[in-house]
Image (cartoon, rainbow, N blue to C red; front, side, top):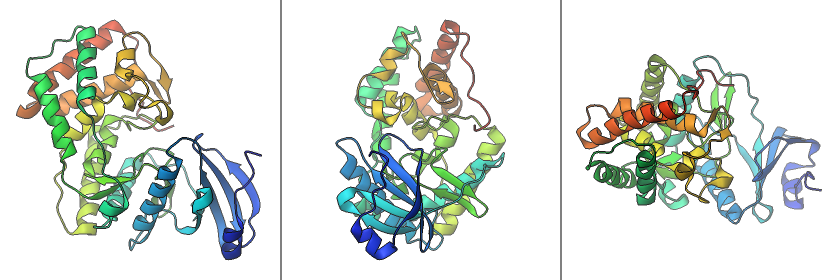
Length: 342
């Protein structure tokens, strides 16, 4: 049966017989159970589906091992693995409803996760991949279709942006999908799960999630400027405490990079299939808390504000403001992203 618990003889020999297995909700790319073991409640996760299943499993195991070695880990403890079946056994982490200012605690935990990779992260995980020239072309084509006029230098600005992102300094352990649902809030802080997309690179590309609306996730939200500033200060302070180094929080490039990626409008199973930005003039679709057009409108507003007055992206700032105005004129019923997490 598809729901049958995968717990082989090797795991039983080291962890004992699992009791009371209960299948939990998960993506189509994994099967997850809660079980009782002699050591306490545990989660059993089996990575399934897709030609990249082995890679996703290897990434998650590597990331959990690196992050779990920190003095104060922000990932579940790994109790056992079965590589042949792509199974992980982890300590169960109870989740409670996040508080109103949850992004501050989230940002502290995200910084702790990013700081936990160490030099080994470069050999253990692949480097983060940002947008490319195809994303630039698709974004500019969308602007043209909707009648937003790009200054002649915008294409060069965007191609320079992709090069900066590709060479951004940093060896942070990146989660890959640090979204609501993959963060477990407890009395002691936040624990991250589901690190199948883990990589290494600049931590700013994931800190940007708070402003740009969780681009790889169903749960787009929009926090107040004051709360965002608190969260970003908390991230920088935790990074300094964990690494002994200061971090300049400049999110213009990171937010603009997520803006121009059409695949950041659809869930993982649909990425890399078609030009998602080319679909927007003709159709809209809902994924989670907002529609695709509403996602893009939110990101345009964020980048227009952050990029204003920045010489290297001056043309992009103007284009974002105009393109958002065009979208609201074409589709006046577009709603802002919700302030509260569901």
